[in-house]
Image: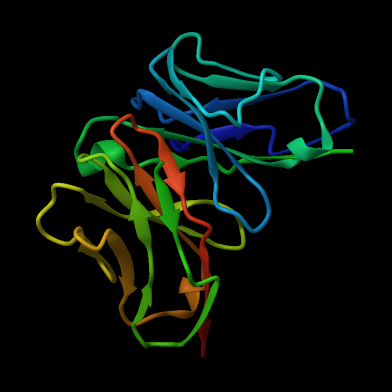
Length: 117
Length: 113
């Protein structure tokens, strides 16, 4: 399978615990994005990477959230001291980058559904 | 601030009819891109179509076309000959110059047999 993969697909945790999600983008894609989607809403941008550089972070990404892409390939999103409001689907997407249509098309992974009890 | 507005929370359409999903956007950037994504009940986000702000022709991808009216800042999705499998949530989205992506709140499309 050469699409975007995410692990785990589901995570249930207790409030206050730390969680980490992984995203493996399509191998030749140099851009990687993280989004959060709550029920009935569109995805909300969290952050994105161009290779290993984190170029933009949303204000939604509080100091409890950190994302890395150490070698410009896979990425991790960590949430520390989880709160019930963190319950959501966390989506990862990747793209080639560039200004043309092909460069802008984002391919999404299946998401990680987080439930904080 | 950039914003995407989808004013139709839900739509019902008869199978084989054409349907237009509305999207308006707000940006001060000159260079931007517009997308439409489909999200079936299974949850995956499926890319449908892309329009660059400098593209002079409306984008088309099979049964999907994007009616881009730059002066009105609208980017409506037209689905021709709708099928039962088109039932899903549809999101309009915009990429700005800095590659940040903003999604609208979505339209739930239901196709009646």
